[in-house]
Image (cartoon, rainbow, N blue to C red; front, side, top):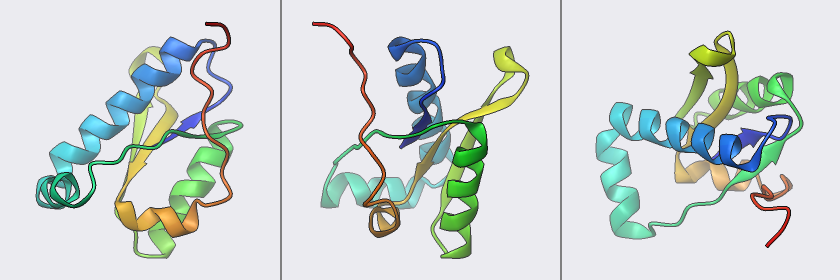
Length: 104
């Protein structure tokens, strides 16, 4: 999953990522079931903002990677997160991990 890093809180980032993942699973059920069998690995990555998220989604789509972009109705239908097929990994290697907690 890739989440916009400019969302105001860690919890909002996690929720948006969960929305994107749920949308991806519901629209790509067979591939999601295969992912669960093969690896069941989740990775949260980050981009600076909505523009970078949409650019990332476009890049993945151009390379034939199934991707779902979640838009949040409570934020004016802003794109906040995406979830993609495990085949996206090779295209996202340089993206930084998302920081969910700033304090423990």
